[in-house]
Amino acid sequence: MFKHLCTLAVLGAGGLIAVAPAVAAQNPVRWTTGGAVWSTQQQAFDTFVDSGEVTDRGLEGGLNRSGWTASEVRAGMSKSYNVDLRAVTRYLYSNAGVDFLKTATLNYYPYRSMGSTSVQALRSAIIKDSVDGSISSIGIMRALPTDFRLAEGPQAVGAEGRCKPQTAQCTSLLSWYVFLPARIQASQVPDPFLDK
Image (cartoon, one colour):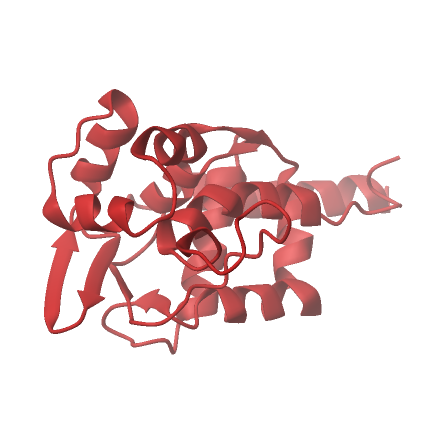
């Protein structure tokens, strides 16, 4: 009985996420490079992932600074990973998950709150994208609840052994997005009681 109640509680929370009002970031990346600031709209990322066409100068600059080719970033952002909503949620609320979210949002955080709601905002986007049992970089980006900005400085990509050391592959925002869903999938925390 306890197992069923816990499952319903978690799935109920997921249902609330799924039916919540559609509030999403209009500008998932506000780039800050040198003295320049530029906001890239979600539509530009969607166009890029859907067709490969780059229609935004901020996105073009981000691709040039990513350490990857545009086609590699596009493939990485559209790749889908199977996840379990409960296991993802369990991880993101664990101490390790909170530490991960804090590190992940040191230089990429909600534009208006300037970091005070970083953990909650990124967590909500990942959980919202996980509701259907799969996640992707573009799906997480589309689920961001507010505009985000990228401050100058390296991004914690967390792809040791998969990115070329001492290059933008290990420090750029788009590289971080490419590796984010795989990192979440690998970090899921199955519940030994519920998942039997």
